[in-house]
Length: 324
Image 1 (cartoon, rainbow, N blue to C red):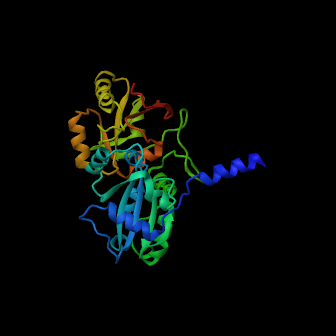
Image 2 (cartoon, rainbow, N blue to C red):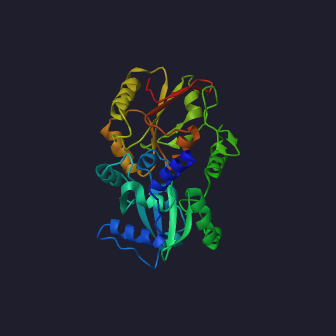
Image 3 (cartoon, rainbow, N blue to C red):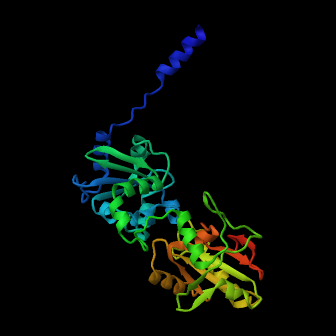
C-alpha cells in the first residue's frame, strides 16, 4: 500500500501536456509569421514541415510539390516550417538562398506547431481550411489526396512533363523502357545496384552539347568512373566537397586508363547554375545535367561527390563516397 501511495504521488506530480486546438495553433502560427505575410482565408493553408538537411540531399518534397495540379497550387498557400532541432536561424537563411520557393519559412521554436499537429516526421503536410484540418500525411498521401480532388484535371491534361503525378516506380519503368537499362525492380521500386550488378545504362547530352553513352564508352575496353556531384557545393552538409572535386580534376588529368563521366544533380537548379558550377571548379570531364535526377535514382545515390566504377563487362566494380 505504501508503494502504491508513492507511485500515485509521483504520477499526480507530473506535468500535464495539453495539445493546442487547431484554432489556438492558427493564432500561434499567425504570431510566428513575418509581418508582411498574411494568411489568405479564401485559400487552403498548406503547412509544409521540412528537414532542410533532407532537402539538401534531395530527399525532400520540394520537387513533388511543384508537380501538383495547377488548380491546387493556385488555390492554396504554403507555409514552410522547420522544427527547432539541429538548425539555426542563420542556416535557415542560407537554405532559402538555394531554395527561394520555400517561403515563408518559419523556425518552429520548441517544435510546438509540429507537436500540436502530431507531426513526428518530415517532410510532412497538413492542409487547413477555415482553421479545420482537412488533410494530414506524408508526400505520397498528399499526392493521392490532391489527385482525387482534381481528378478531372489529372485525367484530361497532358502530364508528360512537369505536371504528371508519377510514383518513383512508374518513373523508373518509363526510364527502363526508353533507355533499355538494366535496373532491377521489385514491388517497392528500384533495387539499389550493388557491386557485381549490371550498371544501369544511359545515354544523355552533356552541358557542352555532346552525347555520353555508357555502352559506347565501354566499347573501347576501358573501365568507367562515374562521379555524381551537386552544384550546391560548397555547403555545410557536403563536407570536403571542394577538396573531393579538386581530386576528381587531378585524377581525370593523370589517369587515362579509364573513361570519366560527371553527373550533376538537377534538384532545385537549372543548367545555367550547373554550368557556372562546372566553370567555378574547372571540371574537365564530360558533364551530364541529370534532369529529374533519373541517373541519380537509377544508381540510388544520395551523397555527393560519390563515385561508381564500372568495369569493362558493364558490372559495378566499386561504389563509394571516397574519390579514388
